[in-house]
Amino acid sequence: MTKDVDVLKDVTKMLIDSQKGYAKAAEVTDDNYVLHAEFMERSQERAQLITDFQMQTQTLGAEPETDGGVLGTLHRAMTDFSSLFRDDEKAALGAIDDGEERLAEYIESKLNDDITPPTRGLLQKAHMSARAGEAYANRMEHRV
Image 1 (cartoon, rainbow, N blue to C red):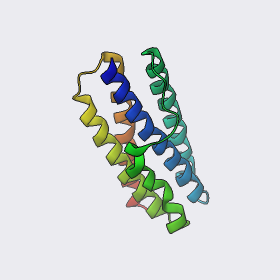
Image 2: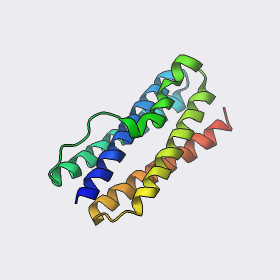
Image 3: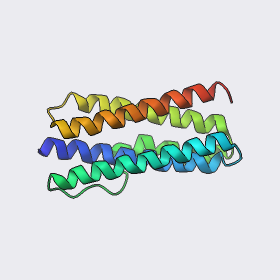
């Protein structure tokens, strides 16, 4: 169970950073209804994943993470693009693409750990979400 808690907490930190990244991307793309709406929807999806991970952590008797952290530092970098790129939709999509790829790869590495089925199920759900976000950003990068 300790392994589960560690994995849940690590991924929760990254999901928090990801959720903040999507919210920031929505701000940057507020003139593009399609991108803005998609980023807001994905931000809300991440918020739900965060809640699910926090609830599982509590079920295992541990205190859940509520902030991004050291493991999410690379991912959090995608939330800082607005000060560098202002309204550059392509830059926002690139940052999302990179962040989602990192998140998915990190989760993949944790799926190989000795964890319980409920934790594995949450990781698989988060992994699918990250890969879907990466694919969306990649597709849209080529259209913008």
